[in-house]
Length: 204
Image (cartoon, rainbow, N blue to C red):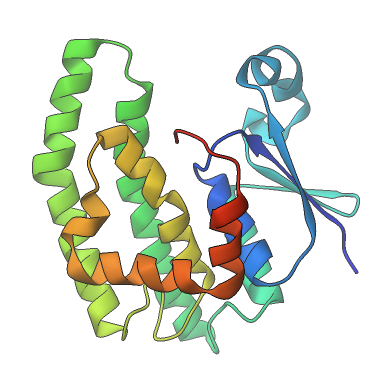
């Protein structure tokens, strides 16, 4: 049995999707949370391309959150049943990455006036554009994001959802009926429900 060690910050962020997939799949793993200052001063140079999260699998190192989620999904029956289904899952997950880049840009912005402008664009233009379409995809898929059954993409979307809401300071996922119910469906999964009750409390 493989040994897993997830290394990420003390935050939900994009690492939460990996945690959720591992937990839902019954995989034991070390949840290592690094301090940001330690990361900058000591650890960043030791990781591939200087980014987190990374997942150590036995003696191997995996990086890039989507690639990690896709790999675990294939290992744990959370992928598609054929190449076309995998393509659908990938398309929807990668479109979410397109959206996420806007949230990351807002989070990293240091100038307050520019930050406020970016926030308003997100709330009034970007989120309605993407979330309206995501909501429709979930409805068409019978309540799932990637395809018509539970997949790693569902955890990818939901795992980052609270971070989005913390950054934009509004519960935007709750404003879209199918996205809101989709998140509740994931949170009701027995192992995920238990994880949420016991996980570290973090702002993002």
